[in-house]
Length: 217
Ligand code: SF4
Image (cartoon, rainbow, N blue to C red; front, top):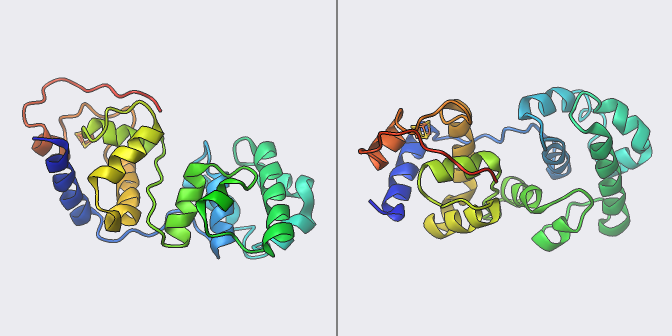
């Protein structure tokens, strides 16, 4: 079975397993989605949601965070990992949005990736989940699953993104990246799999006998 055949089987199973794909990070608007994605680096979505549920009812526009200033932002997010660095990014990002974009989140990859603290993955999540633009954000979890499923030979997330975009039609990207994230959280966890336990692998690799090893992103 080649990778294209595997990709079709995987798509079918994921569509059946996760027909609906709600966005895991709670937000009020595209700006708060951007902030939540930024806060979620090295931190779980649950943790981010627990913190932001007390922030977003009151502070949900770039102007609010500029007014708060760095120190107060730090206090609000201090239960999140690397909160000082993140508070600095949230402040600088908000300031840039107010000064350069009239308080709006820009709609292009180029502009998003130029914002403080925003890399390609964060920009991809905002383009996809916020603006509905076809994108394929690849984090370490998607990277791991794509390797286990034989969809990439997995040197880094950049290559994995290219491989996944090549294999799956554009119209599936936005839903699919969330389905892969859900599947990784529920079944295909980092330390718990031997590559022979569930339907995706038993269908794609009926002869697989040994545990598979994946390369880190
Ligand atoms: S068998 Fe393991 S590697 Fe394959 S999909 Fe299931 S959990 Fe993931």
